[in-house]
Length: 170
Length: 162
Image (cartoon, rainbow over all chains, first blue to last red; front, top):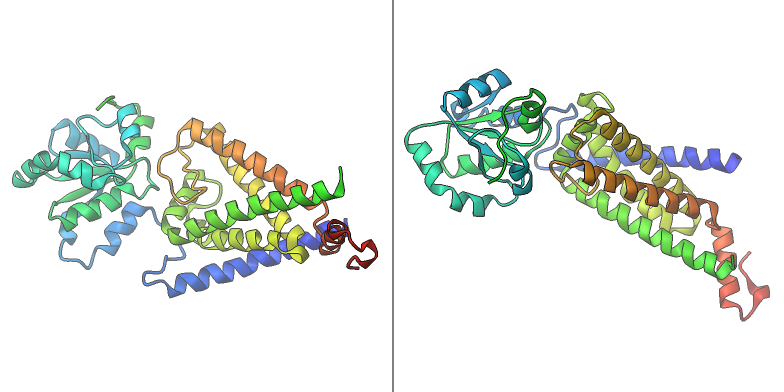
């Protein structure tokens, strides 16, 4: 019993040392992680605020997303892996997954260019509020000159939970 | 069980656990923001804590993996790994029960998870927990390992390390 308690205390010590190492390594990163968590979409928009394209990127809520999709006023992009896209996606969404970005981008270049010429915003979403895929895809699209970008922060999970229309297949 | 086999199996389990946890820890350390997002999906702790946990857990996994390989700290390593697995299991099971879209994040952020992938992660964690308990219980203190080593060498049983 004594040994069990001793090992538990030593393990706790190891955890504290780990915390110190983790914070130390983080402080040495070129872009340290803030100590307070923010969902990736919000963090991405905030971190981009000093860039020239600040005005070209926004977070959107469920109501706005619904409205824009109903009006056909956006090109909807699903940043999740294709398997998840096939199981279900938002109406009229194109799959531009983070994992296969270049291949998907080439396959959908025409649609993307058309939207860009018509100045139609790109509405990107991923699995849920805490996934990074939408922000990463947005980052790559912006680098290629595609904007304005809207990130639907709630993602597929919020859409599905609200019982809204879902399309299946490719 | 024969002590030589106990010794060999214990070492095999220690190598498996060390390999899995060091690998998982390194992957998570490379992408702390992705791991923080995974932690937030579990809704087990206040969301704002996710970054601090994402910075602390990966080094803990790596240190626990190294500790379990060293004779004098194997039990502390096993204890730590068992503790981590219990926490992971609680997170996964409650996520599954509550129908949360949990992203396991076990080997870095893996994106959306399905019920099947969560169930597989639970199965894997149960196996790892059993291995850690076995390592803890079986002869893992430095003294016992060294004694067993002496038995394996066998040419001079009296010459065992004491």
